[in-house]
Length: 479
Image 1 (cartoon, rainbow, N blue to C red):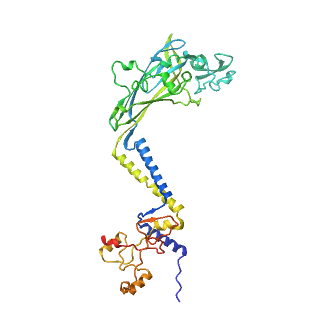
Image 2 (cartoon, rainbow, N blue to C red):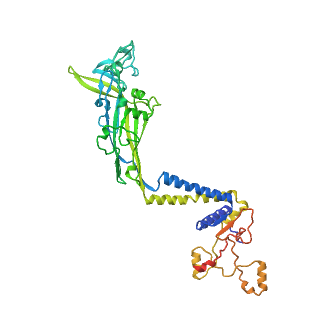
């Protein structure tokens, strides 16, 4: 007696069936089915979501953001500056050539408002500054000869010498003497500095649109010699007082002149090129750029020296300058109507309106789907028949995934069948048995609340127990 063939494991059979069903489902085609649900609250939610999406695109996207335009950011720009004015310190009169650094008139420049001067420095030996670490000493043993501190003022000689004032001692260094902390003198230049005038000439160009404009208006009669900037009456007179710039930045001029700081002059060119060129105007804003609330990084100062000879020896004057640095920053954006972004944003808007349908479907099938009424009416499964036919409508229907027309009429109800047989119509229902009537719903249904049962006039009333249901192919003859 032959041995029984071993059966494959149950898990392998289940996995094979799952893979086959996944592979079969991959080639299915899905088409939307329209169902009208008579529910006032769900309809209000649907229309409200559509209204919100429509308002967002009309007001924000198209009106505020002007997404119907082709835009260009970061214009090509040039900036030329010029400072005028004189001021006084405790010892002298200062003019533009002395307190403006650098003098070239670029977009970044500094106006000196306070200085600490160390005059008559010569190359020699002197006491190191007490601010340098390990510079204090009691005797020569505390100083190492030849040591070079990168934060110091020279090369240590190994001697401990008295400091410039007081009874303290520091190590002696070889370098420019006396050092800065030992003999510096402070001078304040900010007395008349608020009245300094700053001319800022700016021109921009948008190469994509071939548009250029400047911030100076072409007027005759020496207009720039008698005007100062005003946002309303003199917008195209870019002559600003230093005190006005500091005030608009929200700073105190006296404090800023003593510690120094960085002020940004921002020129913004936002131009709608669908309008005339006169509507494209510069907008000025001012703010402090260095973080004043952090003492370690606030303020602004720099050092420079002036060299000369006295009795044949090289001498210099070291100046530590505190000042207000002005950074002129230019940015902007230009836009002009273009068909491509308009079509793209319109398509996006129309597509986004479908979010309302998705949200309402989720509410309908999640919270309102009592007894699976809505899901049974929304989802149908349609399969093609297993028999074949040689006629071209059936062949075309099979290619398109449609069921062929049934060869026999649908079987009526049992009562109707008996009545038909009694009337002598039994020949229409001869063997082979008829195909079952389609139980799928028509393409559009009117669905009321879940509690109401489907009436006689409603086609899809109960879900079919079969996996596949043949469709009514009466329209296939039109193929």
